Amino acid sequence: MKQMLQYLKAYKKESIIAPLFKMLEASFELLVPIVMANIIDVGIQNGDKPYIWRMCALMIALGVLGLVCSLTAQYFAAKAAMGFGTALRKALFGHINSLSYNELDQIGTPTLITRMTSDINQAQTGVNMMLRLFLRSPFIVIGAVVMAFTISAKLTIIFLIAVPLIGLAIYLIMRITVPIYKKVQSILDQIVLHTRENYVGARVVRAFSREKDETEQFDEISGNLKNTQLYAGKISALMNPITYVMVNIAILCILWFGGWQVQIGSVSQGQIVALVNYMNQILLALVALANLIVAVTRALVCAIRINEVFRVNSSMKEGAEEKNTQESGKPRVVFDHVTFTYGGAQEASLTDISFSAMPGETVGIIGGTGSGKSTLVNLIPRFYDATKGSVTVDGQDVKAYTFRHLREKIGVVPQKAVLFLGTIRSNLQWRKKDAKERELWKALQIAQVEEVVKKKQKGLDEKVETGGRNFSGGQRQRLTIARALVGEPEILILDDSASALDFATDAALRRSIKESTGNATVFLVSQRAATVKNADQILVLDDGKLVGKGTHEELLKNCNVYKEICMSQFSSQEVAQL
Ligand SMILES: Nc1ncnc2c1ncn2[C@@H]1O[C@H](COP(=O)(O)OP(=O)(O)OP(=O)(O)O)[C@@H](O)[C@H]1O
Image 1 (cartoon, rainbow, N blue to C red):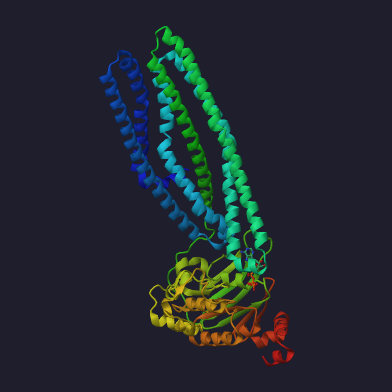
Image 2: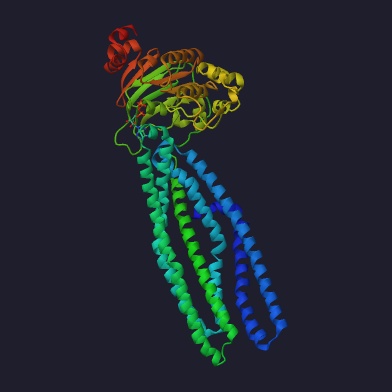
């Protein structure tokens, strides 16, 4: 909580003014029963109409003053809570962006979304209620007991018995409901997870006619949420009847014992009415306090969940190197006995991989599905860190560079072609914000997508929908290749980026990349032998191990796995001619 409160720091003034004005409002409220008592005891008893009018005017003035104070408090509390929410959201967003793939894999996207949205909103509501009520409610309860004491010390005993009993009833109810509210938040996580999977995979769901099953599963989770909330609601609903019965019993006692006191003349009728009013004020304050505790507990649960994310630190330490250290004749990328195991995985996905790639060289990486190809290239831009061994770029361990500098050197085309909401231009300028029109068209031309963009009515300014859904799979792939080419990276990684392209386009793409990337080192990941066969060096992976390294001809002679891959894709005659 302490950590959370730092986001309120900028709203210190508001955080002090709001509760102060609420206390001021409470003070005016506590004066009302006294004025009422005076109207009865002085005004009505003596038939003094001007006095009654004066007192009525005073009551209205107290009401108006209370309203003004309450509105002022509301304004400042809302301002502080909104500011708190905004600062927290910004900090969490920045923190999540600083985490490495390793941590993101482990936490999971759905829960991060719930924490960024619903949890922060709950925390914000908690802060708002806290600022308004955390002083006001206890102030009213204590103030009302003190005021009752000034009226009659004897009758205050009833207050001293009733208040703890009402407090105890509220506490017992909340002991049951608070853990349920904690559970509600984790069920919300499941709903986000299910909704996300369902919407992202909407086409697959329909293709397999799984709508009914998916709906049933969703109904089950949301039914679970409803039942849990209903259970909490039913128990909370006991709060009002129980507390009202207790207060009414206390009022009966006040009237009963108060009646005796009035008869012997130690308390006036007006004072009895004031005592009844104080008892009612106490009830309302305690119920408000209970609501506050529920909101604050929910906010605390959310704060804990948000803090859990803050507590996860990136397992990667960023280096400081900003200089280019490439020496001519030296390799651009070197893997030295690299082994890598994903967090939580039992087995290594890469074992003892060693190779080096020179500037201008094209490195083909081939292997069956799950053999570790993507994992290998992901180590170059430091999406993950090698568990053993080292990865070197331009003579320096990748860990020595700042993330920005390392990634500026590298153009990555991930396996899944993802474009972002905006225009073709804005998507292409991701690597280089100020890339000129000429550079963008050149990249489009190399990526074999120039014609597609030219045909668009607005050209480079054509809109790109979320995820690039207004482009075909092959167009998306080529646009992501163009995006990686802008800014002329020193290392280009194409992770199975031509899988949706026909053979002719794939061949043309490889040719133009070879011709235009000059001194860049290109990594071509593919399951197709035809894609990698012209590479200067081919790495053959099998179950995370490097089982072959060399040119196509060399591997055909001495690498069985490579030969098998080729044989499975071409006839023996074609293999001989390859
Ligand atoms: N984020 C992850 N967490 C845990 N294990 C993973 C993760 N990503 C991949 N793996 C595992 O690592 C191994 C290598 O996966 P990788 O994605 O590198 O294979 P690949 O050769 O690129 O496969 P494909 O050609 O099918 O894309 C697989 O066994 C896979 O299950």
